[in-house]
Amino acid sequence: MATYNGLRHLDEQLHSLLAALGPEDELVVVDDASTDGTWERLQRFGDTRMRLHRNPENLGVRGSFQRALSLVRSDVILLADQDDVWERDKRDRLLAAFVSDPRVMVAVSDACLIDGDGRRFADSFMATRGGFDGSLAGTLVRSRFLGCAMAVRRDVLALALPIPARAPMHDMWLGVVGGTLGRVAYVDAPLLRYRRHGGNASPARSPSRLQAVRWRLDLVVALGLRLAGRALSLGARPGPRPG
Image 1 (cartoon, rainbow, N blue to C red):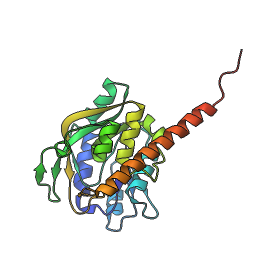
Image 2: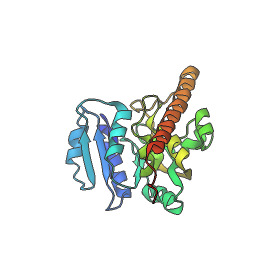
Image 3: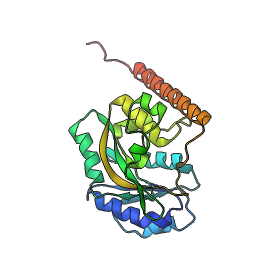
Image 4: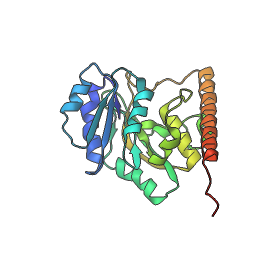
């Protein structure tokens, strides 16, 4: 979880999230130099599963999530925003996608949409995106990778980190990298209440056509560069010595 000046909804999200996690799980929180009391509230929350880190200066959502991902220790990582509400079975149902198929590198669920006061105004985020499509081609048309509804296998991070400056957003980047390495699983159920309001880090309005094209080109270039670097790295490794 990355936090920044999210005190208003923080308690509700933390209570819902921690209720869904198991006793052996961890919650890594990176606070992005909040000034509204968010950091102080995190320190007072008092759950031993929480590991708190604070950026000395504001890094933005991409930099904060990158730092959080670099600090995790679990084999499966669920991403979380500071202002949503998790359903009690979110963790278990996303984790089941990885357990049932070792080829799954990314799992994504649906979400219902709520406003700043918690009122539901849409039953399905994916329906507003034309249904789920986790393929690269589908993502280039319209991304369905919603970070707060995603989980990734730790193996994805070896290729995905650091998140390149060309990547439009961290969730889209993790989704396409995971899809390149293996399967993307979709859980067709609203496993969280996704809050849309004026303070969201991701834009509520669609980007301009020019910006959307630029983002897609940047994504393809970044992915190509990362895969090329990986191939060169593997090719440079010495093979087994002859007996």
